[in-house]
Image (cartoon, rainbow, N blue to C red):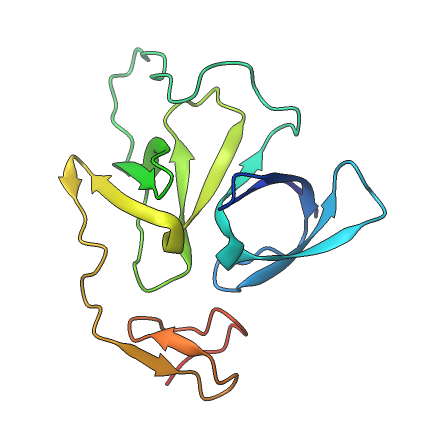
Amino acid sequence: MLTKIVAKKKDGSMIKGTTGDFLPFRNTFHMTVDNAPDVIAEVLVDDLKAVFFVKTLEGSKAPHNRPPEKSGSGKQPAERRISVTFMDNEVIEGYSHSFHLDRLGFFMNSIDPNDNNERIFVVLSYVKGILSDGKAVDLNAGMVSEKTCEFCGKKLDLRWKHCPFDGRKIK
């Protein structure tokens, strides 16, 4: 099944299209580019700031981070409220069930249920800061050093449990 996505790159550019092989622990995925349907591009997750899984590729004209409409139930969502600040100082607010700093990134949901984004994959290598339920998250917690993947030979963070380059479990 193909999913509509907008891949925002660290340089500010965007690629719109569809993908069928995005996995949060792999460092690459393929996408069919919207304005060139015959082109299948290999996308390196490390070049991105976020991947937006969207309802439509045209986007929404509504302002971002609009507070959700009040519901009559008064129920709070089960997820933690988070605020992500990227290296370019863009801030995205939303909710996340969990996020692990030993992975390439994590998924979050938009704060506005009527937003065009169904979910957002935040790439941790481009995150400046995270607030979780109003408290700052130490992005360097547990950071000791690097190690080398025994399969591909690339440098890895000691916290990583899977190689982001080939997806294999690290011993």
